[in-house]
Length: 290
Length: 281
Ligand SMILES: Cc1ncc(C[n+]2csc(CCOP(=O)(O)OP(=O)(O)O)c2C)c(N)n1
Ligand SMILES: [Mg+2]
Image 1 (cartoon, chains in turn cyan, yellow):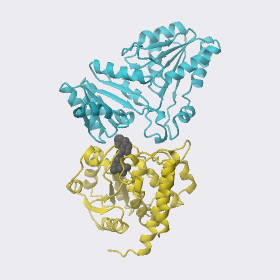
Image 2 (image 1 turned 90 degrees about the vertical axis):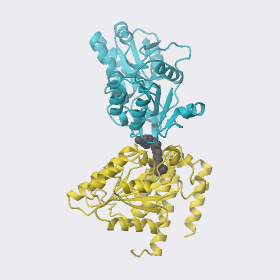
Image 3 (image 1 turned 60 degrees about the horizontal axis):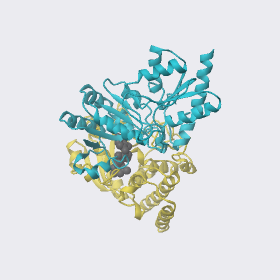
Image 4 (image 1 turned 45 degrees about the vertical axis):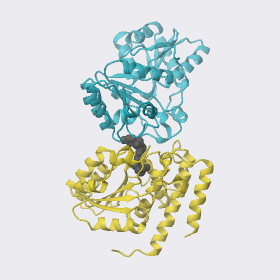
């Protein structure tokens, strides 16, 4: 395993790897396209490179390099990016990438991971390193409550049901998983039983778990710290449309850019809250019962 | 060389201290942002906005204005401070920097902030944007000039050199690039992260007219701009040797203050130092 970095190794903590293995981290400066192709070269010669930086630079900024040098060539490069989504906060729209899941899941052969918390991020690192082929994994800078535990099973391609329920299913990824659980608790007080699924693998999608949720609960709400254009909402919608169509509501960024502000303020302003997930559930139930 | 009066220099020095105070207050108030690179570019930005640029604060989109492009967008506190002091928007608005619903975004946004000419945040796009501006000025037979400020960390970015080639291909002599050579990028010294030297020779090899100056000496800054104006057929790169965090002793040359605001105690110390400097004029 080797790591390549782009002047952000301290803030995303890959510097810790360099402390243990000083000759296995390559600091390539503010040159992300170069970083990705260097990683591809390392992979072609048998190394397992982890390329890590902020999500906006590790995805959108380097998109065609990833497409050609990593995915098309089917190389064993693992792109792990922090600082995804609105919760980057005061840096503003330039740094708040809400389109990376869309970009990455559109690339053939790419595995796309969005862990819900710290323990799950660690499992993503292990699982990505153990599999062959390109991986993109995105997570946020902000503090998140821990919703999984070290003992929970984890496998790429398997969505995990965190809470069972029968009236509606809430499917979230990343920081929105905790908010789905919060919404489920609110719904329970209203005597609505909500299933909660942690969709930490966005691609390949766990069709069986999603199909079962559609059949058994009859309605779905998705929640992501990402645009609803081609994010997990769109992925789930096309899966259920092809198998067992049920009403769906999508909580996420509504095709707009973010702005400067504190993480919580932004989540509130852009509607990425447990309340919006609850509203989405009400909406789905209303449409289903019509 | 044109005469530069003592009075002009004293006025610019004083203005630069005012801008530095704004930078410290804005980033402290936001408890985030990038004071170091704002302070290192401060004297260049001051010279441009308070002596060189033909701009009209009451008409920010005046078509014949000179264009200032901040490629290293994270240093926008210095830009916002200069624009406010120049009258593009109220000075009080500076305290909304990085807050929700503010016109002063954490990185510059074109069309939102009066006087801001380019969107930046991802490093390395500003010089290309400046090439586009300079090409348009030439097409329209306009006399306005384009000034672009880049970080030395941006010399890592491949696109900077793509722009450098395009600018010399088209002989864009209305374009002047300032390279804020403070020797530090986000997490270390440039020569450790990605060695840049010999930097002047690189720009020369890309067929630019190259000057190396002390980026905190107003006489040298103004003389360099004068020479750029006189230079025909080639763009000018001014490699400005600067100190990151310049103006506040405990921030100078400290990697930490690339992207860290001052604490409450540091704020007091920093403002006291700057006020003492101001009082000396
Ligand atoms: C493409 C890109 N990669 C990474 C970053 C994160 N980043 C922000 S500022 C910075 C360092 C900038 O150094 P420099 O250009 O020297 O700026 P200055 O010292 O003048 O503040 C980095 C790596 C970025 N903004 N853009
Ligand atoms: Mg620098």
